[in-house]
Length: 195
Image (cartoon, helix red, strand yellow):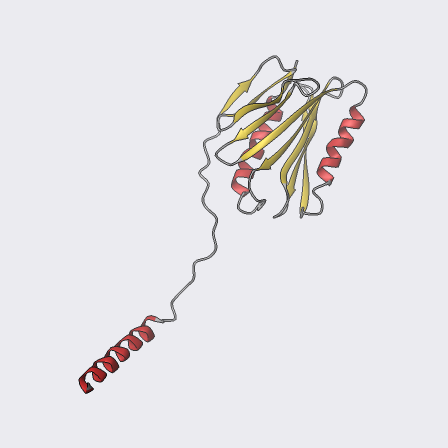
């Protein structure tokens, strides 16, 4: 019995000394991190159909149609399945009501102010294609939409878009995807042609 107690004491001392030696001061906890997104190389395809507009979009995206019935017959979505993101495009024919459409676009951006830390405006001016508008970059960890924009020729056409992700908004972790898709939106604006 005494030998058994000695063995337990020796084993306990061995375990305690091992624990004390393993608790060195050079331990460094790993920082919190987000999963790495692998970004595809930027390449573009042309969307040109019976719609009153044509543009180039990323080969990493897919076009899906929202509604082929009037009045939304020229609305579409640009889906990014690898990022779980979608650019929602809505088209309106301008008939002396451009100010109403501009106010609507502005109102959609203003809705994000409570969660936004900043809203940066990128003006769009392509005189050769008669494409004018604004891209709004919405910053903030909990902002629902990272980017909103409108494009118009100021006479006949008005196209409004918004970027949303099908995940809980955390724009810190989504930053690489937001940057990638924002570059695609800028390319869409540069390649847009009215019919």
